[in-house]
Image (cartoon, rainbow, N blue to C red):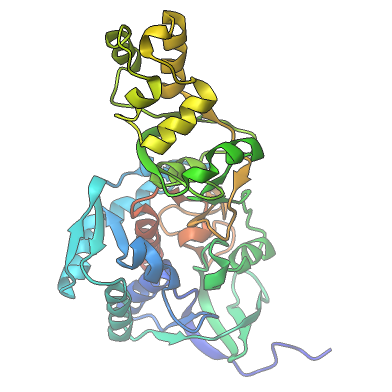
Length: 401
C-alpha cells in the first residue's frame, strides 16, 4: 500500500482544524504572537454557527456570565479560561471594529446589524495576524510518528502539512446541515483522549403520543413559566410546537434532562393560585374563564378539559381547588424524547476535561494537542454563553500553541 505521508510537507507552527468561533479566536491570538498559523475547514465558508446565532444578529456574549452558566462533569474547568477572557474583552474587540450592539434581556448582547459583522471582524483580525485559512479542505488522516517529539502530520486534499501544535476546534455534532461532523471526537479517541457521553442540548422536546393528541392544536402558543428538572430550574417562555415543546426555558432544561425524566412546569409562577381561587370561590365565573385571564385562552380551555373540568367556581370543593392549584404550579410532563441533533443548538458532553489543562486547553498526555470550543465537555446555557466559551477557550489556547 502506498504511504499516505510520502509528500514533502508544508510546515506551520500551528494547525487549527475548524474555522468557527473558537478556532478563529485561537488563530488570531497565536498569530499575534508571531506563530505561523493555518486554519483548515471542510466547509466553503467560515463561522457557520456564528452566522445563524441570535436569529442572524449573533448573540455574541452575556454580560452576566459566570461559571454557573455552564454544564460539565468538572464544573470548575471553565473558570480559568472565562477569567482570562471576559465579556468586556470581547466588547472591546467589537468596539475597535465599530460594531454596534444592544443588550436584550438577562444580559444577552446582540449586533445591531447582522452576524456577518462579527465574521468580517474575525476575518480582518486573522488577516492582520498573518493567519492562513483554507476552506473546502477535507482532512483525510492525522498522525504523529514518535510522540511527543515529532510534529503532527495532517493529510488533506490540499496535501500534507506538518505542525508542532494541533488544535481541534471542530465543534460538536449538532446542526449537521451546517456541516457538523464527529471528527473532533475521532481525533481525541485516536490519541487516547477520553470523550464523555454525548447528547443533543438546547433542543426542543417531543411529547408523548397521548400528550401530543391533547396539545398539538396549541402549536404557536407561548407563555412565561418556570420549568424544572432534577432540581435545576429556568424561568422563561415555553412554546407549543406541532411535535412538542420548545422556547427558551425548554431549551435550557433540555441540557439537564435524560431519557425517562419528568419535567415540571409552573404555569403561574407569579401567582398564589390557591389564594386566587379562595377569593373567587363563591363566584359563578367558570374555571376556564378565570384561568383565561392569566393564561392564553386556548391553552386554558385545553388544560381545563384534561385536568380540571370547567364549572362555576362555587361548585368546586376546597379539596378540588387545592388539587387544581397544585397542578397549575406543578404541571408534570414526561417528554417522549428530543428533536435530536438536527434541531439541537449545541452538543452536550465531549472531550473529557480531566484530560486537558484548564489553563492552556492542551491534552495533558499529548503535548502539542489542544481541544477548544464545543468539542470539549463544557456546555453553556442559552443566551450567548456558548459563543463566549468558544472565544474564551480559543483565546486561552492561543496564548500557548
